[in-house]
Image 1: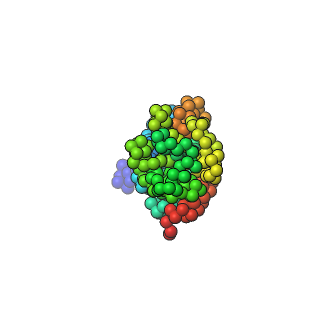
Image 2: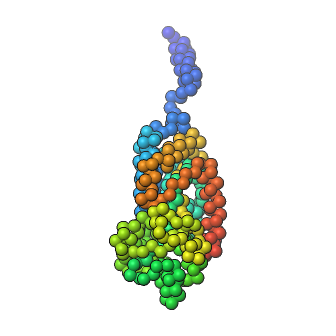
Image 3: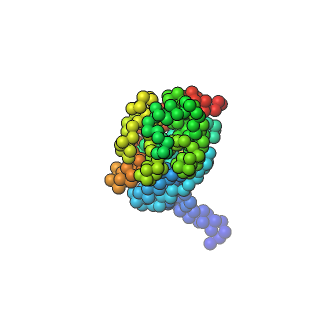
Length: 326
């Protein structure tokens, strides 16, 4: 075989091989296809500790069973959620990096911690709702919001929140504005506010019900109000702020989002897995004990819901002087 013929023969074989790959819909080297999703572990970034982290772990474990691959809940806390959101936003939009999101996507943006907002993500599904609860020490003698307000008008009281600009801060500000009282906000991270309340270093705390439950059962703390429009199943005897004459309806939603541009096939598979989990009796049983109310919304509806909620949060933060101007 002469050199010219050998070159031509080799080139011909290479062209035949490439044609075969094309015919089969293959390529010698290719990235994972959305149609194959998922074929490797999924990582869910968790922005906060406490009940948020507990629910996220329950969701991740159950999703893993539905998807057939590991779903790892990884804590990336800090800056009111901005640390975790920034990380996920920087990852490839392929469905393998998701975030356990909440109203914090709006509060972290509008308080100046992030230069991007909810539009940097595609909603996957809303999972449920969580309601802030206000607790005081049992020995304070306060049993209602009116009694707390009367005391707060005599001297400035200290209230523990998750952090400045956090949803518990926003809820507290909305509540105390309606009550006509001025308080000192003391920010605590990682569920420390109830401990500080027990120690007497603050006078009240607005946090998630699960953080108060054991102390309430021990008779050391009393929950005097929740900020939802209706009473919550985990604390059926606790009246709402509205029932006590203060028109407040502040509820935190939690769900899952992915970087903008994530393939629709991947989002659809994640969405279906989440729906199956939220519909399961096992997951609902865990949620009831934690004071978390399952409230599934599919991806498209969730996106619209977040956009509408962002407008409301921006307006409220502006009215409370918490929104940073741009």
